[in-house]
Length: 112
Image 1 (cartoon, rainbow, N blue to C red):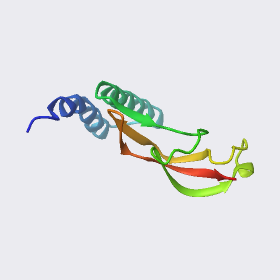
Image 2 (image 1 turned 180 degrees about the horizontal axis):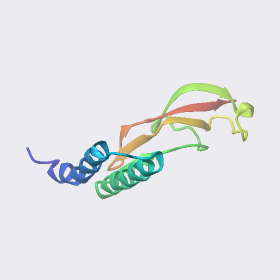
Image 3 (image 1 turned 90 degrees about the horizontal axis):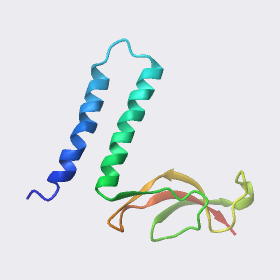
Image 4 (image 1 turned 120 degrees about the vertical axis):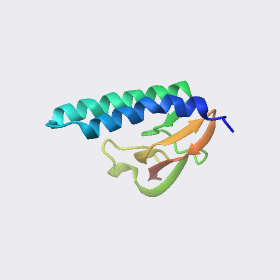
C-alpha cells in the first residue's frame, strides 16, 4: 500500500517548485529559465535517488531492448554521418528503473 511513499515524498519539492513558478509575477524569460533548470535538477536528483536511469542513445548502436525505432534515414544524411543501425536522433528519451525498461527511447535509426 505504501511501496511508493519514499518516491512520492521525494517528488514533493519538485511540485512545490513548479507551483511557486506559476505564482511568480513580473517574471522574465531568463528567470523562468533559471527556475525551470533548478526544478529539472531537483527532478534529476529524485530520479538518481530512486534508480530511474535516462536512456539517451544518440549515436549508439540501435538496441531493440532499449529503443523503439520510429523511422529510418540514410546514415549519410545525418550531420555528422552515422553508421548503419545506429541512432541518428532521439525523439524522446527512455527510462530504466532497476535495470528494467520503464519506457523505451523513441529514435530515428540510420539504415544500411
